[in-house]
Image 1 (tube, rainbow, N blue to C red):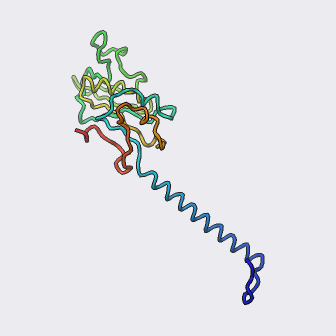
Image 2 (image 1 turned 120 degrees about the vertical axis):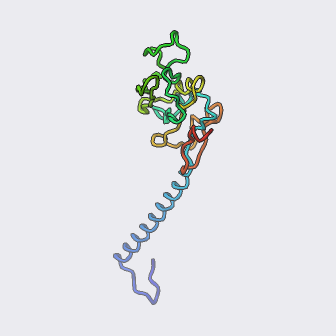
Image 3 (image 1 turned 135 degrees about the vertical axis):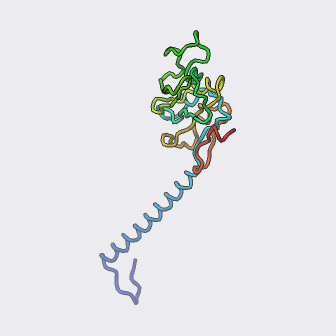
Length: 189
């Protein structure tokens, strides 16, 4: 910055103050631009279409996270609250009993609570659920399909190229608007 013939010379203090303002404005502009680009990129999230899902098990093994962001959820309005739920118990056990060895879930993520004879309530402990879809397969094959898989957005890192979506044999995992992040089983009928 050189002083013109009609202006006063710039001293060191003025030069540093003007330079600091310029750096601050440039940094603020860059930050606003970065935030705007990230906000725009987060308008879509990954989700599973429960009508296309074939319960292949890829959700448990293909997620980039140590424990998959895919969890089983329960559509209680569709549930029959059966005593012998095929999502909870093996669909074809050696003997048709409620014995613990007949339970379907490998991590005991499904809790069974007695309501009244012959009805039971089944709830999912998402902390234990690994997204293996064994319960979903059993419920869909012999039951009413009230158990299904969803990507939980509080766990999902929303990868640009979802590894589970790439390996999904039915292309059931797609991007959906962040304003409607879940595809519910009840909405699909």
